[in-house]
Length: 327
Image 1 (cartoon, rainbow, N blue to C red):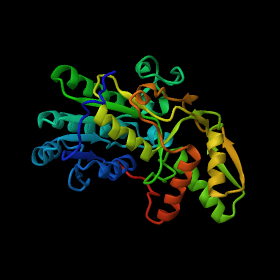
Image 2 (cartoon, helix red, strand yellow):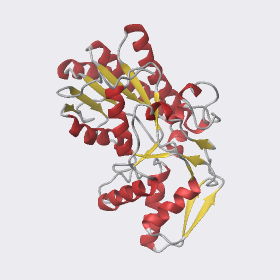
Image 3 (cartoon, one colour):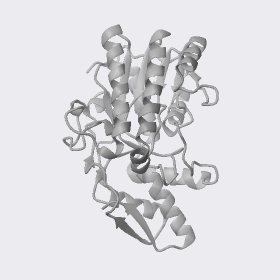
């Protein structure tokens, strides 16, 4: 591992481009960067389509960022990944290739690529170390997305190896929090369960149903903790290998469902639907490389869920209750 507390990458007065600033992770990075005394650059999708190489090159040539957080991606849960593999593969490959290549061409000093813990094999050892990458078969339900994210990681490593570009990558665990996607056809487990239990409580229903058996174990990280870790890594880490970002703790889907019902104050029962896929049996990241740099998460799971539900309840009318394309 290569990192230095003595000579960090100083963000002060740097022009920092946050790709995907309107998404959950990108907006959290922007909130974190406010404290860094840097110049934050963003571009709305209407102005810059990251899938279009010509537009991306022109934007980088005009704006000349010093640092880039590549947090833009087409994202979604099991249903969305399984039903639209071509969209997930093509869009994410295009975004990664265009941004990474333009960053190199225009002399960006440092780039942090945001991957996903789904890059690891379905039956990876637990907790999952960074070197488990490409040691086994992927989870079939999100294979297209995983392949795209692996390609982006490898592209960063290739530019680093061939051109000595300071491009690094971080692989976060399952994220949740303010700005999440609450569309039940494309959301991840926590926003889906928050919405289901909230609506069931309001409608006076006595039961909610969760996908699968409820037995898989998952690790969850509040998005503001993720942003804190990513900005931290941008400043202190420079190495070929990617870095896992998580809490180091996991919980069953059933247990997180019970916790969400408690937070929402839904007193009904929780039914399972074993006809729906469970996905990977367990996914817990080994975060020893990250914690060795001095970083720790701030939110426990319950406190994080309280914060996420508070945001959802306050923004229900305008939050993403229907599918979105790119973060």
